[in-house]
Image (cartoon, rainbow, N blue to C red; front, top):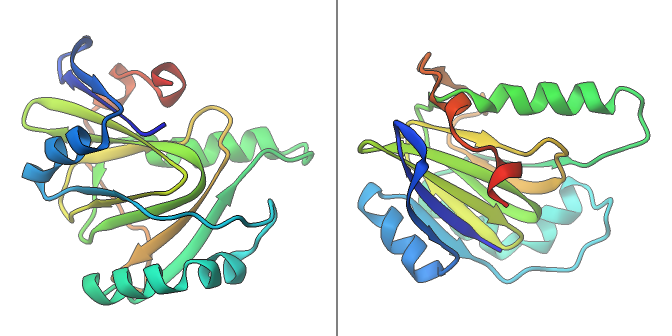
Length: 187
């Protein structure tokens, strides 16, 4: 279930809005040029690789790539495994994205499966947007945000990049992300 929770930046318990209504979510994000839309989903195997995922969503991927001049598209998959190093790998991956940052290009993600939460720090508020299967989230370049994949990451997402160097962040140094509820707390 896609969810938006808006909180005052200084008080995580001051919840200004909590909704699962997609029209309301889109309207709340629109003034910041942030879009959230839903695509029809395709049934894929649990271990579908990058080529299979991209082929399944080929028409949508081509449309978004053309409209946003995205030159690099890839697939990221996080899911628990029997690998004894999985907990450390998952924790490291999660921590990389948990600190507030910006990008010099748009951050665009389509959730093939699973969920994750984008936190957008805008106009004195924090907009926590829990995205799930079928959600396409587009965050414009320069938007202050962070991402939480949860304590037990399990998702597959298509990522769109304008530059070949992929995910490059400019961290703000603000500790606000540590003062807001985690994805696990929101859902």
